Image (cartoon, one colour):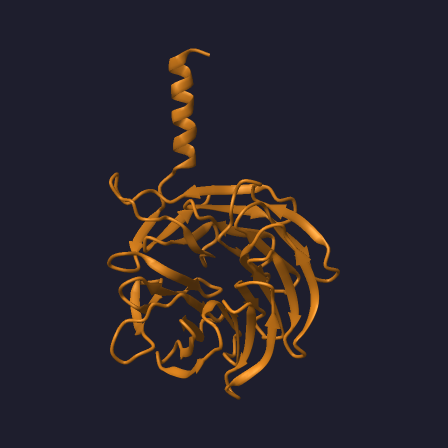
Length: 320
């Protein structure tokens, strides 16, 4: 192939893989974010920033509704955040302190000091149950009405990822030792256990509680059918990493984000990658990280969100 034609072809291919987002705006003024969470309809996004504390945004008009910090004076470093799927409640973690918020009024509903530093959070639709993954090799299921733990789940290492069903009846935990466990939240008993060769970075549960996805720091993620615990398919690449994931409302698609700034849309049935996007650098001289911390399906079909560690929220247009 002639050199000029080769260069032209490479340019076209690179352009196709690097289409710019349809919209982009900053969720923090500087220094990026630690944690990001969406509700199920992508109506709100909760942000734990590096220098500006926590904040809840409404996406329809890009309005910051509340600034949330664990102390009356000072800005919190929220290493973990979670929004209930219905958007009514939010949970934030700083160090060992856990706080539940009312998303309608912006007021705190309770605060608790846990035994270990909080790495990951998930909250049920009624706000009554919060599942927290901790550095002390455990996960804690907290009943916010009783103000006490209902169950303590033990792992062999830090619990990096947790997920809970909308009704708070089942949950899953994933740890650095590569173990994923599915739990009955009422009894505190493990229902299923799977093992990977490397640590877990992300979990996602389908709305109908039929499918569970686990992403790894190194290698492909997996989707299981929870009815029988059998693996449905693998998602991603052997040399890749998946930092966050979310199922579509019907469970037929999975949206993933990676530490390199890329986001992908997959078919859950055959593991085919349907779309792929990559967060552009803010400027030629920018050295900020571009890890994707959270992804979401927009209410409008064919539109998707990815939240990047440099503080940007990117809006992607899918191909028809």
